[in-house]
Length: 279
Image (cartoon, rainbow, N blue to C red; front, side, top):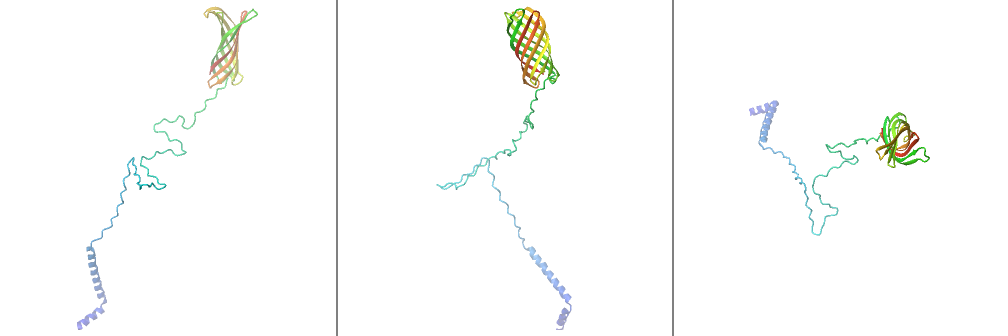
């Protein structure tokens, strides 16, 4: 009885020792509890469900099956059957952007950005025509005059050949030959006037030319035997118009008159000719 009373009195008198004993008991209990929990099997973690695999795409030319309807019944109003699968439609160029570009390796268009320039205008007459070469041919008549009161005449073919040199605005220096050929009584008469002269343009197309030089008249029997030949003063004059004018060429229509003055006689020819000039 005395020991028990002494122990109780000592326990109440030493509170620190009692708290330590309590702490030790709680620690032992926690250790045993953790070991018990560790021996239990862990719950499996939830496995995420895999996404469903999409069905394979239908191949080319696939045609879906037409829906089946009960006898006597058709598709509902507004229903359109599904279309078959096929290659994608081709793409056209966007509206407003023009045609598609040319294929690779194709030659480029002739004019990619700008249209061709217009043809150059015809050159001005005169000094712009530094050098000119031209010729003419036409039809007319030839006249013969002598001491007899009545002249003789016949149809003739006129000709002209010339070289021109621009010396001033609307003015050319000419060196050429004008003439005509006629036939009568098996005689062929040919008169030529070799001249030096001028050609002046009264406008861009209207012109007059003339010159003086040596005139020569011959007559051949049957086109071969020389019947006679004479030389004298020759004069020529022409009035004409250039109907067409290009940059380096022109087409003219002109009336030509030539005269040759010989001993006791005179020969004159008048013809209408069409000619070309190149410059």
